[in-house]
Amino acid sequence: MSVKKPFGLFEVTGIELEYMVVDRETLKASPTVDLLFKDVTGAITSDVERGDVDWSNELVAHVVELKTARPTEDIASFRRKFASEVSAIDTVLAKRGLMLLPTAAHPLFDPFTETVIWPHDNNDIYALYNRIFDCRGHGWSNLQSVHLNLPFANDTEFAKLHTAIRLLLPIIPALSASSPILDGKPTGHMDARMEAYLRHQERLPQLMGALIPEAVLNQEEYYREVFGPIGKALAPFDPDGIMDHQFANSRGAIARFDRNAIEIRVVDIQECPSADLAIAELIVETLKALVDERWASNYLQRAWHQNDLLSIFKEVIKAAGDTPITRKEFLLMFNMHREQATANELWKHIFHEVSHGMSTNAQASIMHILDHGCLARRILARTGAEPDPERIIAVYKELALCLREDRQLA
Image (cartoon, rainbow, N blue to C red):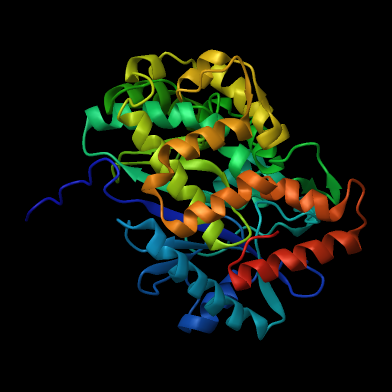
């Protein structure tokens, strides 16, 4: 039997998009993804195969995930495929008076009363998480994201890719932040999802580390520095060995050696697939430039400590594109010769450098974000600083319409 050769750097990308199922009128979360899947397949299942895009569920019963069935060589080609699956799901949900809600956090969701853990496949893992952490919190059950999976063929490729991803993680929320409101109030964070995520595993800090991964360069080092402490921390809570250490790792980017990929997890989901895939294209093109050492050597990229990168990340999840980046040596990593710049100015610079590798549609979507602000900023422009629930519902219904029509919020 021949062993399948792993994909090399940037040959393919795996993409996952998460959405909440809600009531069409009240926007109340509906823990009925199992019924959605049963309506389509005739049986309760955790996965629905649909050709190029599969549907699945993880952890909570109100979230559905759409994902590339196989990693794709052409991100742009999935714009219509994802939009088509959103439409298919919407048609089924409409019969129950339900719909999909975009953005990374439901603005009115109460995780302490509305969370329902997925009771079907993999429930033993989810039940273990619930026992350890109590998953009734925004950082567990109200965080819809985009996951990007990028391959590496060997340790050399892993080192280059992991180093580049670490450096880029702090500024990704400047583009993607879409979660400014929790519990009916603006939180002061454009990316409240990531702010909640940073705190959701405080009981076992080894699982997340500093969110920004350590500067490890090969599989052996990763197992020693990352998986080792995770295993030790989990052992007293998991005597039956239910949990896979790769599954328990909750850094902002995680190595998946079982499939020779690194998964990026700090991207808030947008209002439509076009915007999600545009951000994915820009991230991939930027990582290509970093891996190719176009702006700074791999050695200089690697020198950044995770705590220094985390401090930038924490500022960016607050103010997104308006964040002042005052570390000129960080700007130099992207060939920006300035004493300081906002995160938005840095992204405009990066976009100018790498946009030639992106599809026309993706370029237009990114320009919309860079010109009008991240989605969180645009949401707050609609709701105002002290919105009532009716105003919030009206704005988020408009976002649900953006999702159905695959268009960006103006």
